[in-house]
Length: 351
Image 1: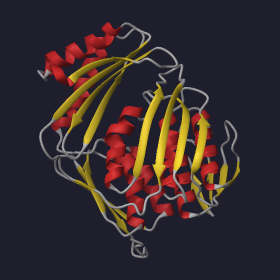
Image 2: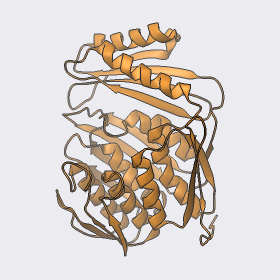
Image 3: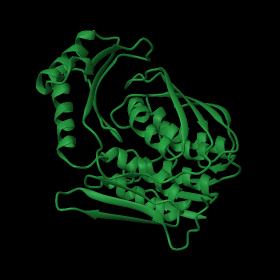
């Protein structure tokens, strides 16, 4: 049984999610202790517990310690099964993080799956649905993963109430991916979402970004979300290239002017464009697990990103515990980091 100390590295929920997914896919039992030990409120929260129970359902696993606030958890995985499942976070906790937890398992299951997840879809501490749909899933498709995603209801913080639906076809083998340069010209797109608040908020966000960038008016849109669990506002700057997209996201807050939200979001977008790294800090973290599974199949992957976050560094250590992979990172003079993921010396490629 693999022992994982949840207090290592950045000590957050990523350790739980990745450990469970990797345990299920590789068939290795895992025991987690000091869960989320690096957080002010340690232990399993609702979104983590939803991920645990989702993993249990799709891998027919035996689980011990699946309670709110639990600091220890054991999973003994069984058969990976497709089918229809419905999971509820029960709060504004991220439905997308639950989806990312079980997605590697469903890609290795014995049949297609349709998954419905209720919870938050747009919150500052997790990848929003749009990032998942427009940035992450297209890259998974290039790695031989067939995943469709739709949103039935938006869930903004703090109300939640969102709902997403995934349709997953088991993969014939996850393949490698190379993202070391941006290809083609910038294709910007700016979208402001508003729910149960005046559309003028989104219009002001778009107007400021349009004035500051001079981008074509066709690149801007304000969407009044028809189905949502509560009020909310998000402005998203999509920096699209032929081979990769990055989504920079600003979250509206009570007492913060729309122009302030837009200005801060644009500042972050410009910083990303100023670097030569095609992969942003959050996308880098999310690509590591499928790249590790591709390495398990004998396929090499590499990408260029900015300085690795503590989150990302911790994720690398978790991958090394479950997979015989060689993960290298080399920092350039300009601060960019080249990351490669390939099979270790004892790994025999299956594809």
